[in-house]
Every structure is written in C-alpha cells, then in structure tokens.
Image (cartoon, rainbow, N blue to C red; front, side):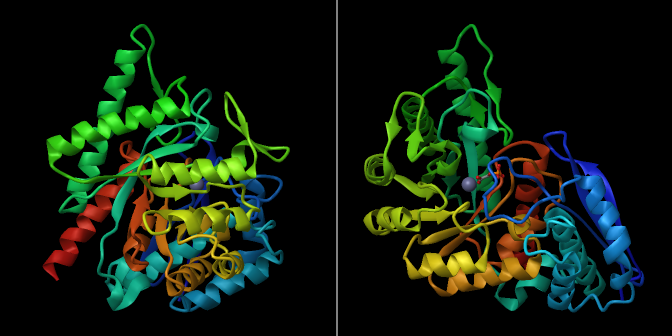
Length: 400
Ligand code: PGA
Ligand code: ZN
C-alpha cells in the first residue's frame, strides 16, 4: 500500500528544473526523476503544464496525491490509468507528463524493492535476459548545439564481448574524434553538445568522414566491429516543405535518396528519423530500400504512442522504434508501444533524452524490453548512470 508520494524539484543536466518522485510503501520506497527533450516530438505528451514545474506539483498536491494514498502499488496498470484519469486531458497537460513519468517509475521501483527483485526482472519477468548494445552519440548538432551539424547525432555501437567492453570502445571513439577535431581546429577549442557529443563548425559530410576515420582506427585497435548510427531528427530542420541543410535544401524525394545513401554508400546501420514526423510514407520508402542492411528508427514519428506505432506497422514505415517513457507519460503506455512494435518485428532502442538526470531506470527497461540498443551517450555522469548500471545488470545475469 502506498503510504506517501512526495514530488520535488531537481535540476537536470542542462540546468533546468525537472521533477523527482518518491513513492513510499510499508518500509520500502522508490525514487525516480524524469528527463527533458530539446527536439521534442509534436505528438509527445506535455512535460509540464503551462505554468511549469511548480504548477505541475501544485496540481499533483491538489488533485492527485490523496487518490494515491492506500493504493495497492502492485497494480501498476491501474495506477497508470488513474494518473491519466486524474489528469483529465489526453496529453497530460494538467499534471504534466514528467510528473506522471516520475510517479509511474518510482512506483515500479518501490514495488521491485518491496519484492526484493531487480527492476528489470519486475518489469520484464523471466524473459528479461538479454543485454542491449550501447549506441553512443559522438558528434552532434541540431537542437543539441549552437553551431554544429544539421544532422542531430552521429552515433557508434561497438560490438564487444561484454556491455562494458562495448561502452568503453564507444568512449574511445569519442575521445579519438575529440583529438581529430583539435588537430583540425588548432587555434580553437572544440566543445560538446547537450548529450556530450563533440560539436564543431563542420558540415554533415565532414562529420561522416571524421566518424569513419575514427571508427576505422579504434575498430582495428580493439579488433571489434563498430556499427555506425545517425539521428537526422529531420523534423527539426524541416521548413516550408524542405529539408534545410547549411548549404542546400532538399525536397522529399531528395531527402529519401540522401537517407538511403547513408545506409548504402556510407554503411550506416541505424538511421533514425530520416523524414519529418508526419511523413509515414516517406519513412516507408526509406525502409523499403534499406531494411535488409539497416534499421530505420522512428522517434519523433512514434513518440512511444501505440496508436502511431500501429499506423507505422500498417504503412511499413520502419523496422525500428525509439522508446522514451516521458514521451507518453507512463510505464504501462510505454510497455504497450513496445509490445505492439515487437510483435510486428520492429527492433526497439531505449533512449535517454538530451536533458537527463542521474536516474538509471532506462537501463532496467532496456533489459525488460529486450532492447537491441540503448542510446545513452558515451561519457558524462548522467549518461554513465545508465551505462554502468547495465554493466552491473550484466554481471547479475551471468551469475544467475
Ligand atoms: P531530445 O532528442 O532532445 O528530444 O531528447 C533526442 C533524440 O532525438 O533522440
Ligand atoms: Zn531522435
């Protein structure tokens, strides 16, 4: 039984306020906080109501808290639907999707603690036995930086024997790219974006060359395959019907060809949000062309929303999906999107957000959801909170 739920403000990795929830049961508790996006999808739930974090907490104290007292925390599905009902809107615009996310997750953690089992086991059951591969952002631009590439993220996924091996090798690629950028911009300092990927005043083509060069070196040094990924986050540079790059504008067909060439000519294995988030058909064309060699991933396209996933399945829009709990607001709704996507054969990738906290719950969800990848950067405490937790979980699974 829930004895108390406390909501508090905490600060995220960008220095903005977000929320953390503590759910208290008899003798056990769960604590969880919610992250924040910068290139948020149009169909995501609202992170906070109009008045911001404070209004969300006020709404919670006035309209939600009392209904949670005495509730049987083990009924996660019921709890999540109650949060929806008490909010009363269809996009959490009263309570705030981040408050719902924090409460939903904190409740699951509290129950896992009370049952004395790890969170991944509680959420995923006996099927939760596989460890994802880390997919880490090494060069970034878009809305995560001020003057970087148009494409939001260039990623690597090292295929090591263990999770830690892979994560360490991803970090080596990150370091190598930093060195290469310093060589190139000798009298300037280079910086990092919100997710700690390197950012510099370079074109997308330059970034691809740099990425490939660094990967080649590290891959041979570590004798390890390293897969390439990218997140166009295409909605963020779609203006008046065109995809606007620094030096050119592409129409729909040209953007489709460009995305296809990323897989066919440059060997990218992971191609996220290649088209604007309303273009299920454009996604389908990219997917049809490269699905035998790459995963096309819908992030802003789906916003972890099961109805949008169903549309994507019907239209064959992608063979992959990105999962972020606070795009949809509850663990149950997230689970539904994952279930439907997985049943149709999509590979799922659990993901951090550009503004993060040190909460590690997505590490557990990656195992619970049998995710192919986890996107959680390569360095930085708020990113490593997840990566290092997966190293611990892997140790756990080996013992069992
Ligand atoms: P975010 O974007 O800024 O919304 O977290 C990350 C992503 O597009 O994958
Ligand atoms: Zn994305």
